[in-house]
Length: 244
Image 1 (tube, rainbow, N blue to C red):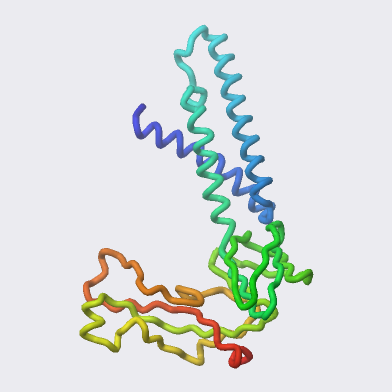
Image 2 (image 1 turned 45 degrees about the vertical axis):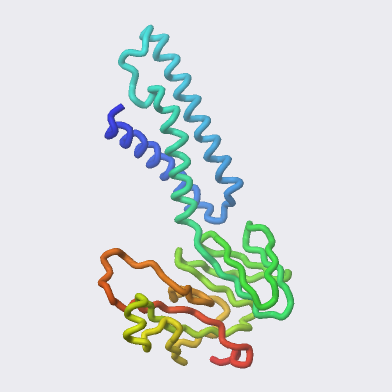
């Protein structure tokens, strides 16, 4: 089969199921995967059954498969499920985003977000979870609060507003540049009191959270010897945690 035809048919299947899933998640953004996935499964089975019945009727009416419409050809049995799977993945990914829940307490806390399962966060630790975009009800040790995940950026929930954070910068460079210019060493961070954050819930604007990696990957087009500056959000020490 011609590659252009294959791509076209797959694109049509993806488009149709993308629209269906987009409408589903737009109307019910909190719908859990264990409900939306079976809905997609039912739609796929229904589509395949329709193709089967229509193919059978076409053959009865025409006594052979010559002139079979492309949407009823046997290849549809492949394109429909594959297109539905790709579309489902694309939509569910675009309607969910990352939330860091940071527990500054000296005791564990139990957290539940909307329809997600309950998770336990160890003392002075954090978890990363994927949550639906929009209004989310978060329950901490039985106490409920509503947070608004406005977009698909990364977000931080600071339990009971116990921790304060500060944004710093880290310079990355090749080993050769670091040897020539030791002041560019990636172990040196630049701190600014203007970057102190003391909020219970906020959008993460930094490149990294809580620690900076020792190395980073850069584009092949990056110039040799270039210094790459990244931002990192650190927790402030407990004695400074109430700074505002």
